[in-house]
Length: 279
Image (tube, rainbow, N blue to C red; front, top):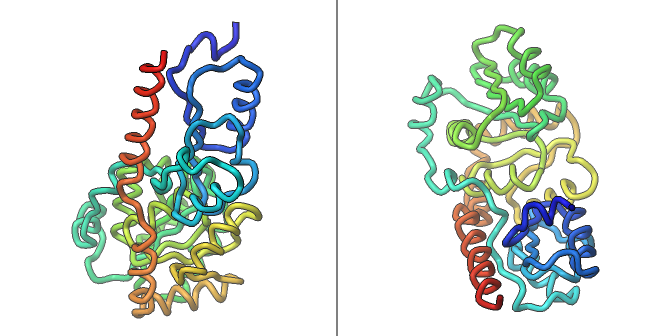
């Protein structure tokens, strides 16, 4: 008895391309009868997402929806919802509120470093350089699930460096709302959360593939800055803190879909209801 037979799902929503392909093949073979949904979690659509047996595509942007249609996906199976992020991002905090919750100065510059859910990237090196070169700055570091990164940063014992581990969505919202800018990866969820809050980004060393494409998307819209080296990153951070972020804020906010999870859930539930009616 397979796991699918054991669970008997009403619907399956894939937020990663390889499972979508595998389940699409299973559906084609007759081993899966429930609706299959592709929730695309990056800003550029690659060919792995175009599974023949998917019943619904949740597209991150209008452009992505058009690209899906051009690749042969029926337009009636595509909805532009944005990348689904936690509903807490629908209710942003003011910078003053967020800093009050975190015990931060209302006036001091604050930079958030993020390495995604696994704490990837040269966060120790970036934090050390920022603290050395930009007096008065406070660095918040979201370490994800990396206990080693958290312990290493915590051991530095600096009041200007605040590491956080296992950051759940509500805390991530607080960190983002408190910050003047975010430095780190260009993962789809990080970009979508930053866009929902209008938080300017500096991207450093994006992972080849989808993160590079996410960065290209941001740069096309003038919504982020790319640092080629650590020294460039510090200069960019200083420029944005000094007022340059004001040009980026409306551009990245224009890409935001704070209600993306609600919109995606509505589409998924409608498909579930329709499938039950057909039964």
